Length: 453
Image (tube, rainbow, N blue to C red; front, top):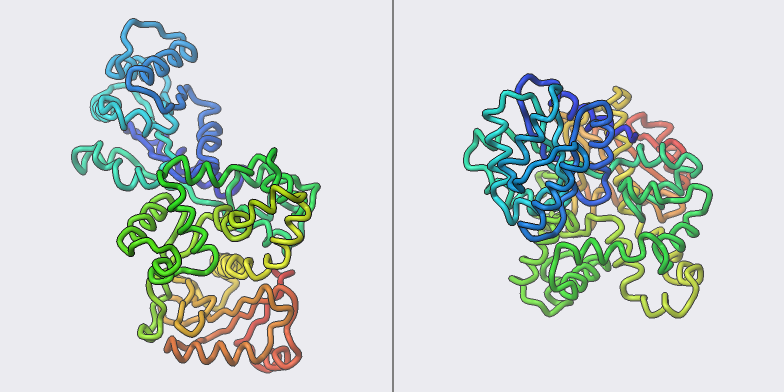
């Protein structure tokens, strides 16, 4: 199991070992391994698992009761949750685990489910644990609190969000590839365990993209349509906005000028995409140079969605008239390095955080981010509580990080009104000789090439 998921397994175990009965809400985007974690957790425990469906209230209860009969051998006449769930909890003398996957499909139509669960948590003499799983992030944030009447009930539900895995975990699962190839993969499918599991480690990056994403038989060929269409209506509007974001139109005014939609409409749709973890607002690292900060910037957060709208969406006619390999060479390969700049910054930030965690960094990082200025961006600002700061420069597409790039960085630091105690300069390839000489004289300048990552 991925190390990040082992941490989540530990969270479930700690809650299970408590004396009182508890419920856990495990939520996060589709494909992040939520169900796999729960399956591993339940291996040595008495448990019942149900995957809720999009169905009518009555049909859902009939499916639920049928699973109870099949898995636990319990038989009774009622199909009401008020009767079924207490019977499940009482089915074993050992502490029991009740798991309901995509549980929102039940509670959206039937409030008796959550009422029964909460009443049992408060009043049952039996020891049990409830695990509720959901892939609808926006719904969990906006609607789930409505199903619990007060704070005492809300405290019974331990909400734990499952996020994508980091670059380190991806590398550990794709050991065949060198670091450079892993950055490419990270910028194409992100840290989604389901996608990583489908990646054929014996094939090249290009071959995997062709087989998994570009081929009509590929498992990820229609994945973006599923991500967008499963939760959102008016997919044409969302796709227009996402294409605009993927091609660099990242402010509200840019989107308004490009799409022709009203600013109010764009704001609503952007917020819906944020609720679903598809888009994010870029928060610039706070410095004294606020006046020079570029505000109101958005970007696509979901990596596969970003890749699709950047390279495939507008070129689908070509994809249908040439081979996948030809399409990759013509429409993806030439622009991939520029696209990967942003993901290289993420990798470098994770690298610094890891060094800080194990005590191999001169600064104990408490806050890290990027500064987005009107004239350019500072890739990394990392500071500790005392105020000591690392400034980072990350260059993926450029073959060489040069001394003149550092001079540009110093200019941006002036606009941001921030100073540095250390400089970490990251290159996917090499550094020029003048920069190497400066780094040799100045211990505060640290050069990091991709092999170190």
